[in-house]
Every structure is written in structure tokens, then in C-alpha cells.
Amino acid sequence: MRQISHELRCICAIHSDEGQTIISSPGNVDAITRKCLREALHKNLVKVCPADTWTGNCHLSNCPYPILINNKHQIQLEDLNKVLVKAITDIVSRWWIDATAKFPERMPLQPMEEKLLRWLEAQNIDSMRPFTKFCGSWRPDFLIEKQTGLANKEAEAFRICEINARFCWNGYMMSALGQKALLDMGICRNGIVGGTDPRKIIDGLQQLYNPEIPLYLLKGDEHGYDIHLYTHYARNVLGQHIRFITPDDLILIPCNQSSHGYKLCCVADPQFLVDGAGVTLLRNEAGEIVEEIHQVGLELHQREILGLSYEMLQQLSLRCFNDMRTLLLVHDKRMLGIVLEELDSLMARKVLLPTEASLLKKGICHTILPGSTKMARFIEMCRLQPSFKDDYILKPVRGGKGEGIIFGDNVTYESWMSRLEELTSPYLSPNGSTNVVQRNIRQAKYDVLLREHVGIQSLPLVGTYHSVHGEFLGIGVWRSSPGPICAISHGGAWMCSMIQTGS
Image (cartoon, rainbow, N blue to C red; front, side, top):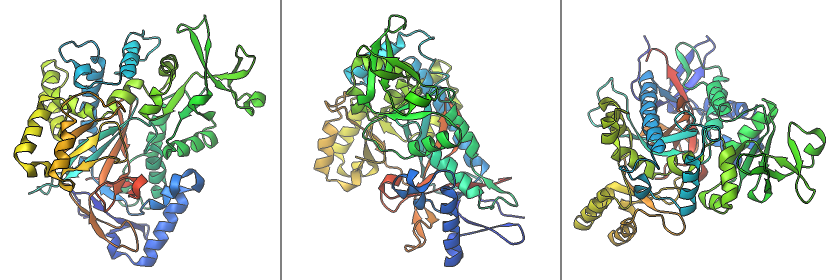
């Protein structure tokens, strides 16, 4: 009988001549076989989306050695997602109306952002879908904390360190295409199956918007990764009309018939003046032909969002399928701190059961909000005990890709205390930034093969999972890197999952 592993492990899965899947460590497989596996995987990755759609040739950093998971890992993340969604949707729904909770004071936004979200709160249900049912695209990242005395039948402890919700496609297509490429290698035999269903991820993205009408993607400085993969797939496989536009392309046309006074439009693309492709064409006051926008996705940084006029933001918010509350509240790293602070209230109000609150307390990285009483106590502890900082990090609340993270054990006491003084206030700086403090998770390490010329290394894994409108779609890609920051944009490698049935 095959031995069931209760811990994650990086494997080499080979389809044998006898029709079986042979499981081994990558280090136990010869170099020629490994080369064949890499080439086969990378060839499969570009079958649907060609190489020029993979930003920075990131498909070449996909390792052919998946992470073997078990049912307990799946259940742990599904349960965690369920209670996380329940908590956050309740908090966001109360954001402006719960005078006792004082969320705007504990997690202040930029003045225009607050004005916009208060305006959205006042809109009727015909204009804005309820957040509890349409909370958008979330991609939480989680770390794996090193366990001491881990019992043989226990799964590893996952700790959510952030929720990526700013760019709604991120990681989704790499997960779906990477998983499909792995399955196409024919290794699903004798109890080994894919860890995530690629079709479920694609279908989840389709739930975000109406595929029957043209979709406009508003982009700025961020080149992006998955957005190009999805656009190619949607155009060429699903036959959908998708167009990239920039903030400079946007036009507002006054309209008395519109309940909000405007039609949102953009400069017309000449090629659609002929074939139409379902595009609504209008003429503005100058007689120019423009396209009316009925649904739009944003891939803008917060500073780019604030660069738009308030009237334009209102109209975008009504047509943006990834809710502005998701972009401005859920993506913010402070939200994790808010959730942890609200656990007692969520239990008292019967939103969460004590067991569910316990899941969140264990499953979210300890996060301290700027300007909070906990932050004041933390600063005092750092002042009294200089080495106290070594177990913590500073993380920008609106960043991504690991940018700007400061490790307490990598800076001087003076530098650390100087940065902490900036966190005595809850408010964002004039440039819209601040930091949370998070406990530096001491991560478990796994034997992985990321680069052939380097060989086997013992490194941490960073996991992720995908959720659309609160539904758990599956585990996403695993990332690994020898450096302290693990991001594909910084040269990290990635791999997908396989699962052993009966585990």
C-alpha cells in the first residue's frame, strides 16, 4: 500500500511504460529525465497562451516538480476561506454605519477614497451589488509556520499574511494553465490527481463579469502578468471582446437619461468602427465617435486611481466588476489587523462561532495596526528590549510583490525605532502609505529543485489560494526562492499541486 504523507513535499512524478505514476524526489531522478520533464512542461504551457503572453518569460520559471498535498491541506484552506469571507464581508458591510466599531478612524483612507466609498454606500441595490454576495476576486498568500513536535497525522499550519485583491487576475491564469500543463504530462495515475481543477478557476473568473458584452480593462503603469494570459485566452478560446484602455482614453458624456448623469465612454478603436464586435458607438459633443463602457476592470495602483477626477471615479465604480470596496479595503494589509481586533465582536454578534474565530486567530499572521493601542505597547516593548524587533517585520499596507518589506533583524535599532515613530498615527502619509507590523513567521523548509545548476535546496514555500465572490476555487501556485522575499517578479520559481487520493 502506498504510504500517505501528511506533510507537503516536492515530488517528481513520472509516467512509466506500465501506465503507472512513479513518485520520487527530484534529486533521485537523473538529469536527462529532469531535462525532458522541464521541456515537456514548458511546451505544454505555451499551447494555449504563446510565449509572448507570459511576461518576462515567467513560464520558464515553472518547475516540473509539483507540491504533493493531501485532503487535510485542502480542508484547512477551505475552512479558513469560509470564515475569512464571513468576517470581512460583515466588517465591510458595517464600515460606514457601525458607530461603535469606528472603522474609518482605525483604518483611515485618503479623503477622496473615503468620499467615494461613502457615496457608494448611499447607492441603491440597482446600482451596486451587495458586497456580501459579490465581494470580488481575492488571492490570499499564506506562509507555512515551522511546527515543533508535529504529530504524524497533522497538516502544516498555514498563516495568511496578506490578501491580494488589487489586480483581480493575478495568479489565476498561472494556476489554471500551470495545472493544465502538468495534467497534460499524463501523470495522473494510481491515486495521483491534480490538486486544483483548472476549469474551476477559469469559470470563477467568468463569474466576475458578463462575458456576453465587451469588457474594457483600464491599465496604467503596471504591465501585469495574468491579465495578458487571460486576455489572450478570452479572445482566442472563449471568443470574447476585450480591449485595453488607459486613463487618458476615458470620456464622460452628460446624459439626462442616465440615473447617475453620465455615460462612461472611451476613445473609439478604429478597427471596431467597421466590425462593431458588439461595441456601443456614440458621438460626443464634438462629433467624435466614442465607445460606451458598460463594464470595466481596473489594473491601477492607488495613486493612479486618485489621479482620476471624482466624477470619473464615481462612474468607474458603478461599472467596475471588482468592487472598489475590495480594492480599497480588502487589499489593504490593515484589514487583517481589523479582522483580528474584531473577533470578540463577531462572536458576540453571532457572526462567527467560537471555533470559527479560533480558526482566524490561528490562520492570520499577527498584524498590528498603526495608531492602535497595541502598536503603542509594541513600540514600548521595542524601546525596552532592542532585540524584540528581530521577530517582526514592517509591511506596506497597499503594496505587493514583497516590495518595501523591512525585516526587524536586518536593520539597526535606531532605524527600526525611527520607522515605528511614524506608526503612532493611524493616518496614511501624504503619499498614501503606511505600514503594519507583522510577526515574522519562522517558516518550515522543504527540499525543492528550483534551478538545475543549483541543485536541491532546503527552502520555504509561499502558498496562495483563489476565491471569487467568497467561493473557494482551489490552491494556487506555490512560490519558492532562496531570498527573504519570494515573488515571481523578483525571480522566484513556481510550481503547482498534485494530491494523493485517500489522503
